[in-house]
Length: 354
Image (cartoon, rainbow, N blue to C red; front, side, top):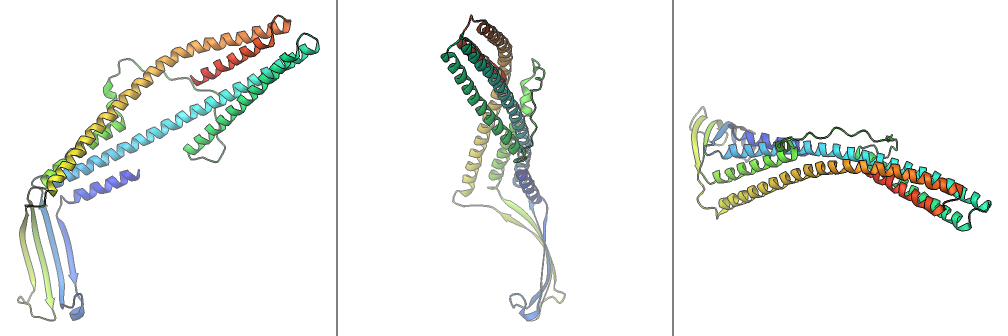
């Protein structure tokens, strides 16, 4: 936003050269005033450069392109921040859901530990089953601690991003919102030309062209019209005209002849900047196409994976139930239940990430 204000100031300053420049000079103080010349009076001076070759207009056009690109960069920054907030919000909800899933798995593991102890007490199990059950429960507690730490970090990051840190008062949703409808097929690629970063790059290319034209026009003559009106008196000498009022008008021609190649060097510099701007425009445009293509490809792929993983979660849940039933009736062992529990936890975590 500050760069936009800065560019707006440059634009106003560049446009001022298209109008006449008027200055007022006054001095007084008697014999000792000013430079002790004794001169005192007032003068009005006006000059106006005739922009015959478009040098001033090219400079103004460059400043306008810079201002527009700064505005577009500001819009892109705002959209990027909004997207980052949304992504952080989704990641925070995901971390909360993973943490809640780990807590459920701990409850189930504690039940298995109790069951293993009961089986050992009645002589249907051994110490190995009890030990493995306890080890599995402790491993799940460690996973739950790590997920809780990840959740707290996600909350702090989101609060910092939205300027609420360290309020610690962020209410995170306990579920993800439904996905929006799919992107319609057949949308034209010209829609990408509306992206602020792409348009800003295009404005910078146009600005570089104007900057080159300005450097080329600087090699041509400058014609300036001058109008002066003054009234001067002196306490040390007698001026020829008693009224001391002088009006004059004229013109000034300035033609660079030899500056050691400075002006041509400026043209070469602006031409190189123009080529760099074109290259940057191509880079940003290619990046925009790649981002959209990657997003669409990911959307299609993840939609298919979501269906597959949902079935995997359902089957893993059923497998845990069946292995637990077999353990209760004595036809299964603790290892099978623990393996199915870990498989269910992994399936849930992958499904949440998707």
